Amino acid sequence: MTENVPSAADEPAPDVTGQGAPAADPVRDVLQQALRGMLVLVAVVTVVGVVVGGIVAGLPGVWGALIGAAVALLFSGTTVVSMMRTTTASVTTTGAVILGAWLVKMMVLVALFAVLDGMDFYDRRVLVGVVLVGVVGSAYLDYRAVSRGRVPYTEPSA
Image (cartoon, rainbow, N blue to C red):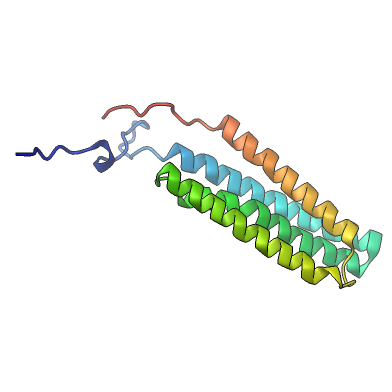
């Protein structure tokens, strides 16, 4: 005869706030911080890129900044969103989702750049500058969110 023993996954998170509410998921908190930082960065890079692009290259610079901001958002956002969607999944599932998202992202980027290759309505220098600042800045913000995040190594027993 088997005993029906509740597992730790069936119980709510312990109250560590002292206010009667279950504790938040620390991993999700770190990922939300990274997502917020990335969205703010892309918004700022978009505004600055449009202004600088407009001054440097006119309307093609504005288009380059807008396309670059969209690419930076796609490139940086998909990884964080994939991680957020799989915080409770197994390591294998998380890896598969992230790899799948990366492959789709690369195919979209290759297709986008192939289509844009023959067009001249945008400034390539502004596009590359905005993409570089957006992606490198987002990687730094992800690093900062993870390094400052308070994720416990063990789960306290209830």
